[in-house]
View 1 (cartoon, rainbow, N blue to C red):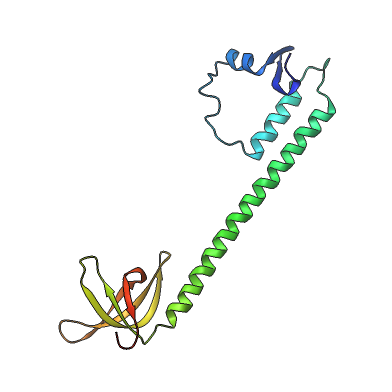
View 2 (cartoon, one colour; view 1 turned 45 degrees about the vertical axis):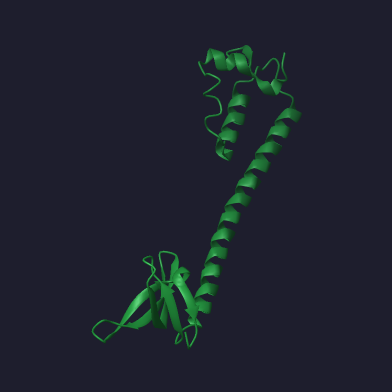
Length: 165
């Protein structure tokens, strides 16, 4: 018979994994639909395996230790992945802060930008804005009526920066 890690004992009868799947009505295409088992599912499977083992032929202690080591490794990898996600968020925030700091140095400078309709505009940077994670500058431009007005300029549309654009 297959190694005891690939067997399941239910009501005193031992099945290999493929036979058990067949008796439970689980098709090969249904197996593996869930791409990941989290640490709780892994522990639940281990406890269930312990509950339903054959008392006359119990699983060897070394196999349990191997499975517990796997569980411990899974838990540690899950924790590392979670911490990496936190680090990624922190780095994104730092990047945004650095960008805002660099753009703040543009305040008072004249910029030129191009809109999607290929029209060029010119104005003086009067501030920096971060809205929904998107960074832009606020430029003061002269409106059609001769009055100064402020407009938000996406940084990827800026074509030139400087006092004499």
